[in-house]
Amino acid sequence: MEIYAAAVVYNKACRNSLTCKSLFGAVADHVHPLIIDNSTADFGNRDYCAEKGWLYCSMNGNAGLSRAYNRALELLHPAAADLIVWADDDTEFPGNYFGDLIRWSEARPDAAVFLPVVMSRERMISPALYGKYRIRTAGSTDELAGREITAINSGMAVRASVYQNYRYNEEIFLDYLDHDFMRYCRSKKLPAAIMTQVLLQQSFFADSRPERIAALKRRKIFSRDFRLYSKACGCFRPITELQLLKGRIRLELTCSRKGK
Image (cartoon, rainbow, N blue to C red; front, side, top):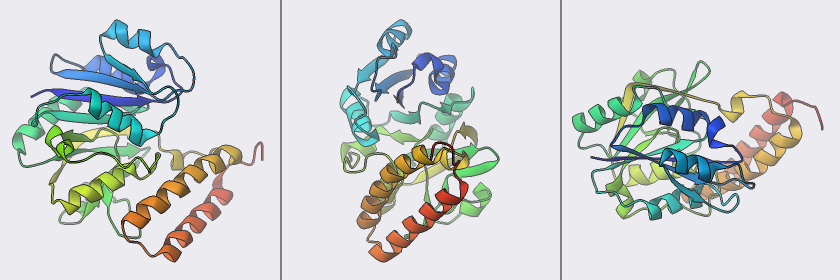
């Protein structure tokens, strides 16, 4: 079994990326890193990857996460039983990640998706409880037992066989792409295994206090993607708009007012 670790970087040098640093410290002969570069300027990442012997692809600008993921799937040629690991450029892989992933994949040959426990500060943000109109965080993995779940991309590992019949929805630029994928897995009854002892730290945008201008720009992308995801889920449009309104009010109450 081979493992392909695909990380998408955006306007960041790989040498400054937590993901790249932790990948370089953790890779073995059976782990093959791929860097998909969504940067809008040259950060020297092609040369960095060449030095490390990693596969590299530039998207020639910010093409969005969905297109970056699909481009990665075009470049990789895994066997059906191989694993593809997804990461952002600020996902820090613990030293035990790949060893534990191999053990989980051998112990759960039925599972199509393997999910680490992703923490933002002291809060578990993934996996989470799925609801048609709301995704809710859980206090612990025990709360997820027997429930419908969803998860974020960071550190998610997927058997390559899943992608024989699936590509990411390129109408979704960034947000809820992972939840849309998990929706597909639920619809196909593809089992997901939660790797309870594998903990990843992730810098989560909602847990920061961004400046208002930056927050509004980010919110615009989120709103568009959330509407597309909600439509695909068959959500009632007024409820979708109410959720977005609540999020906008929360943003105005919590973001920094510098540069407003």
